[in-house]
Length: 183
Image (cartoon, rainbow, N blue to C red; front, side, top):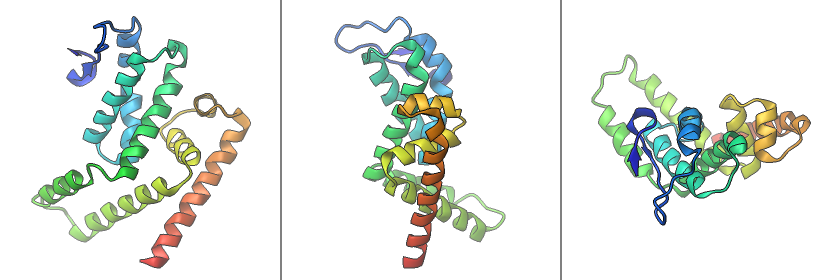
């Protein structure tokens, strides 16, 4: 690996050949903030999102995805990878340990902070229970991608993106309500 890119993040070299895609540095510099942003929205942690971005760019570096399709491919890969991480429960313990360590910081109102953290956890858990295409469409759209970008990334018609996102939002509300009533 070579250190470069954004915030000293490593830019991957192919382990087998030592070669780097000719366009990797340019794509990495241009798309890294978006990839981290998509993953952070799913995970709620910039550190975990940066780990996801590393995995996504490693995969991209080994792929034959044309540079013109990189934005959509990387956004979908970030959402999928983050959702997989969320669903698997890996790193949950380290996030909880980090939150416990942060308890040393005095919050203006501890009750508000606890409620906010609990709400975020509930939303992430509900998001993880949605069908993958709906969850990814919702994450991508709320990450700032246009309808056209979401359509291209998910191989949907642009006209169906709004319907998919609305259904995802409705399913997310149902999941939140279903699990709120069982708590």
